[in-house]
Length: 398
Image (cartoon, rainbow, N blue to C red):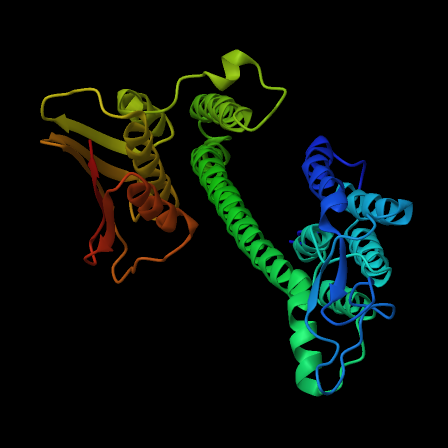
């Protein structure tokens, strides 16, 4: 994700930053004097009009010359440099304005001073807001502009010693801004990854809910539809009963699906979003519906019944529901034994049904969903067959 901020009006904090910087720069101009040199008559700064460096050092070290104070031009250039701070949301414009104004300020003989603070601030904003390599090129050009005012050095060492302090006003804050940009980009990537992970998890949860609801309802409907087709001519009454079961199963599946989808629907009513969630107290209703659909279900609940977390109750219900759906679709006979036991600190459940000889566990979406539901609440689930029985067993903390 790009960390470049779209330019807009200068925000209040930009103006608040420019205010103290302006007071610092403008307030120090009258007392900073001009650059002079021992033994030299020039009053100019380290620029073309300033004292020259000679091979024998006769130009002497630069010293303060309290002579005349800064003129109107110096103040105007200082104002332009301070304005660059207020315009730092346009970083390329800001760095150009600050370095240009500072260079002219120094070239006219004014001393090094707080005006270079504006260069540092705009260099930081440049690296913070503009991506590489553009910000690096702009910073390099800014350094060249600053160095353009300086005297011609006699030796490379002199040139290096003169260039380093001035370049540091750009290089150091630019590096800090670049580091800050990288930190923010890393945080942004992590935040986006966490959001994507949460969205993927929610999609998977919703897909699993829809799979369980629709798969369970369709399995019961298919079973009863086959019965109705088989006995329609010979036993119309039984066919009618099968059609009634189909009607109830489809209505229940649609109602549960509507409740499931209402959670993510902005148009959902309060009644839909707060509809009862399936849990341990609805296992008997689930088994009754499966019996109506033609599955011989035996339900046994043992142990002292107690309230369990809703997420655990939903997990138990969905695991049993998916297991019974698999009985309808894959079992050798439409028969199942459901056992639920309240243990100390856990709920244990098992669903056992007849298996075809040689049948193996096929890892589909439903089996994966059983394991995922158990893992989501900190439990475990095993799905196995011994050649004659198919068994789903899960232990969930509660």
